[in-house]
Length: 455
Image 1 (cartoon, rainbow, N blue to C red):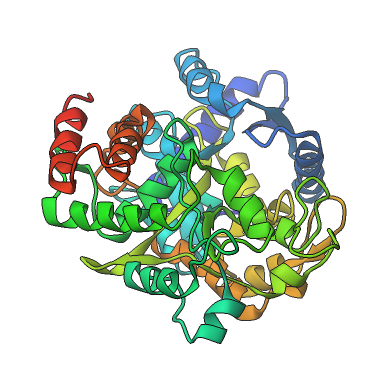
Image 2: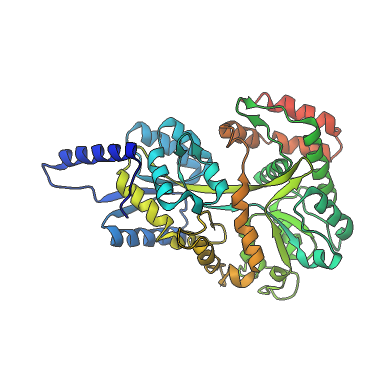
């Protein structure tokens, strides 16, 4: 588990180690515990992380104190701990903190970069690495993630000779063939303005056509042509949906009842689709434990619009941040252990929502993908994803992380992009366009006027 750090960082580690030895020399006591903050605070997930910490201690002799932190409080707690010089050694954190914390000095980017270089950058999903890239390296080490998915009735698509719904045009073509309400809705779009679900879906649809409200200088007016294409597409899927304020609940219920050809959802639907969760059973037939619907389902992670043929995947990525106050070598060892020898254990905390951002190691490029696909998912019943879904679907699930994007990341404007999303201005004005309040051109102008005021 010993690192071969880059030269500059090696000097820093050596100097820190010498200073620690001098400081502790009088008592002969060496630091033997590191602190790990995690936002995975559900009891069963905490138990799995504690087991991983114990495995690391058995391997290295260094104990890990696993400390749960509510995600909504993570930012303020980290800022306060940094000011007090009392940061934990490692923080499991969402994407939104990686670059701001690196810029503020909370994170030791040299340490994270050394871990990634030791493990092999080529073994990680490119999208997950690029979103944490800083000058000369990386802010944090990517751990896991999930990509938003277009979930669709592959059996109906195949029977109708339809292409997978991976482009605006393919989705429109499928709606034209399959939309037959109330027996079958072509789509169930997100239209409930005050739901974060609508924000996520819209960001994915905008990204798919290469549209972002920010550039490296801050707010960037939305392109009229590209944004009009987004609006017209979203109106088309909304018109193929039931009336009302729709969010994740209705889309899941209608799809599970066999009354929707396409929905957009997170991968947390995968175990439910297969009848493994009694609180959300498929109702397509009389057996709530049936795997029938799972067998008829396909997924798409990368969606493309007419102005962006390469498309984009929307992803939620999580990272291990090694902090500025860390016992650096022990923290680096813990992160490497969690991403290598203990990585399958890391993913097992919640495999249905923790896709492997590290595909494999230098000797076996797909080692961790294979191990992850064999981990049991479900609540009331358990089964591995590889038993529930075909290999091509497993590949699609994981492959979205290669091209994962989010507004503001590459531009260094994630904070502004987050404010724009959280304002729900886009949700509101898109819904008003769908409802006929104003036409597409006027909606783009209204979006630009209101978004420009967000600081």
